[in-house]
Image 1: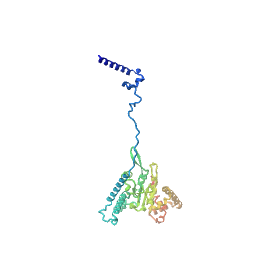
Image 2: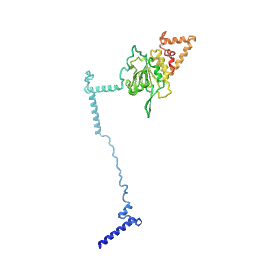
Image 3: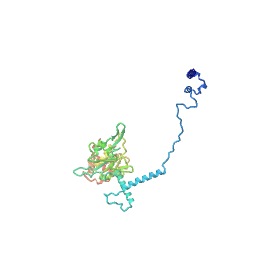
Image 4: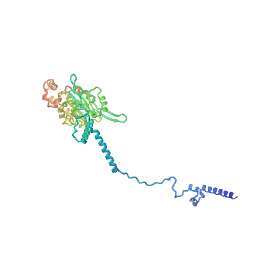
Length: 375
């Protein structure tokens, strides 16, 4: 009987506590902070951490970065010395194929150092120096025809201009007048040579597209230049041609470093489709080629005093023509002009009197070839 009473009492207590927990209006402040488990689900003690932020954050002092220690520097220095010593020993070994060693009388360490220096210099010259001391073959002999003058042209920014497009990549724009320039100044008047600082694998297809008729006789690329002071220098003396008959057209005044007298320096062409520079050069070069000029350097020296060679040429030609027309009798103008031009081409008289007059010398062939200049 006692057990039944105790169980009934426990059931009543549980029912009463459940009713109190489900009815918030019956909870008084004193019960909110009691140790009943049902109240702790709804009302959390203030002293407890929120369940959504169970982690605590602490300040962690960053570790100080330590620089290389003395021991590390010693290891690094020892490794560097070992690598350099091994390279000097390997490169400085005597060449068994070259019994004539010029350093046999030196100390053994110095022998290895000198041989290493020579091999490093040879390796540098393999890339910096021209690929050959003679860049062009000997002039053609009879029965073949060798043009009397050589015209050396830069490719980039003189004949073409590279442009980049995101869709098509790198493309080359052809300068206005290239076709007329090559057709009128190519063989038999000039031996046309492309001499560019561009690499052969990228420049060769461009030259093929510019010259479908084969008017360009020779092509020289970057490996034929001398790389010094950040510039690819073009040595015209290595062309195996008479420098008094060589004209070079470039846009870099540093390129013909040792042959400035042979060079005509143009401004870089930036792709302007209205450019007429090549058209203006045709009369000047054509007149030189058809006037049998003995040394083109004297003519270029005369015109180099002007800021613009082409404009100076046009102005002087007009002035000389007016002077000749005013001096010659009206009735004999035509015959006298024929005599002047005949002497210039060796058809009569002597041209020694005009040898020291570049203006008169290049004027000699102007009239005869004027028909070729119509573009």
